[in-house]
Image 1 (cartoon, rainbow over the protein chains, first blue to last red):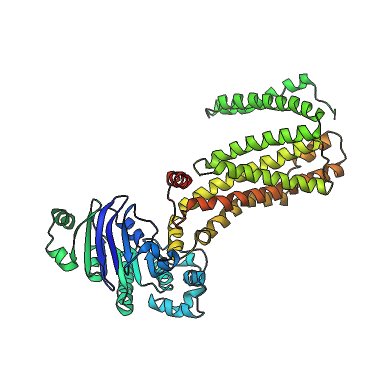
Image 2 (cartoon, each protein chain N blue to C red):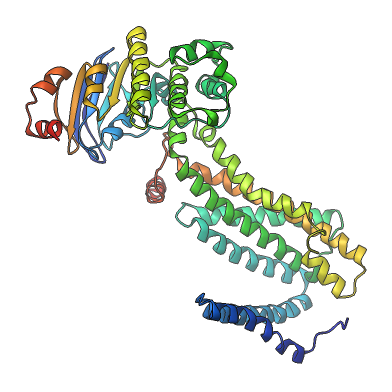
Length: 228
Length: 266
């Protein structure tokens, strides 16, 4: 489905890997190794300085950029909601292509386990967890095929983070989404991911099934990372 | 009131400089040098412009006005550029904006007979319009830079949801324009109540009837109001594009913007 071929950008050096449809990949590794940069290459918020990325066999640059970004939903560490109501935020993406269907907010809020009455609430008056749920619902409003998650629970307390994680897990399983998630929490990686890509010093040092990688790490760097 | 201030009386203005100087000295503000330099520089500049204006006012309007207005436009452009010198093409954009504002306002004045095309009317009034537009452009540039850096996450979110750079920047453009225009709206609201505006004060002191002075003040105040709005809008709507690449990606630093702009030119 998505193939990175010898991609370099900023800290990333010669990255190659393939991601299959409905795969749930976890990107992990020490800070500053380019995990978030790698995530931004999927939806062309950045373009590789070298190498190429393919989506369903076509170079990523051949897919119209707006269409591509709507297919690859991105959820960042902070909710980054736009000023206004919950509904304003949910409508944002679909309204750009005039595809918003009135009443859809109910379904979207249900996905993220928020009450439909919240649609008229000002986003500034929501708790951090509620804001992150709205942000996720806003991403889902575009009906993405791939979810790109950049430490989506790291800014939340443990309990709220777990709640969001449960919502994510259910959604990904129900809707058969492909997922790429950056996380530092190995327990979360185990719960949400199928495959792992361990990144170190800008390269993919090790990859494989998550449980095996965590239980029998091969490289010295991964062993040190898991211990430390 | 005497219509003329004698040169001897002017010497007593030193008292007005001694006061801030003493404040700086007693509270150790470290501003003494700045106070002296600013006062001397201001005095020299004003006298110099006084002599230049006397000369220009005697010249043919078709030479004196374009000459002085061009000087004002160039100086104002370089000054406003300081607020956004890291941004690509900022100088021509500011210069273009100021020319547009000045030409539009001047055309209005002349078309509706508000001002006569003589140096003694056009030059000081153009100076006020250009000066205020310069400040508005500088403020807009500064505000836009800080809005772009504070709202990086929101911009990434908007772009990822499929927004064009223009749509993603709507909030930033709105906030920038708001910040540039609000002081202006407030100034117009309180005009004549809180302070008598400079031009009107000058005319009244020069012996002009208050109602006539008010007419001039209205012309200049509303001209400034509209030129400030126009210049802030012009610079914001043109410059926000430079924060993005043609692939609708956000340029994250001013260095990246300059590097991108120079690559585009090659």
